[in-house]
Image (cartoon, rainbow, N blue to C red; front, side, top):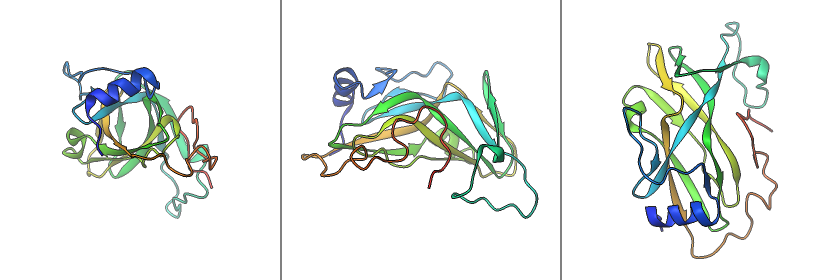
Length: 185
């Protein structure tokens, strides 16, 4: 069952599911964030890891990426992604997903219509942490990503029953991540 805004607001209060929590849509010349009809629009923080230009024979290997492959930056207003590149960022909000909830993430249409694709894996039952967000510029031109503004929408699905084995039970490798987290194997 997809959960409406009243349930999300209650879970944010009672279970500290989202912190900080914006109880309504915030727009004010921003790409919107905060509580929506059936989800929550998450914001991107001001810190990014941009993939460094590498030698032409470099292969992006999810089993062997390290901080040396990225340049880290903190921005005041926005970061510029080079054409056909990607960066990693993190959410401003910290999430604590209940045992009977799965959250799915989708990129904001404002970015999608600009050739910027956002990828976030599902937030599994009892996962918690800041969300690491992959941001790809699919266009042939540089693109801006605005810090402190909406980047993706989280949709919460509630089960009647709690899952048998949660992310926390499995001791998932991305549990309680505090910053931008690179792939772990």
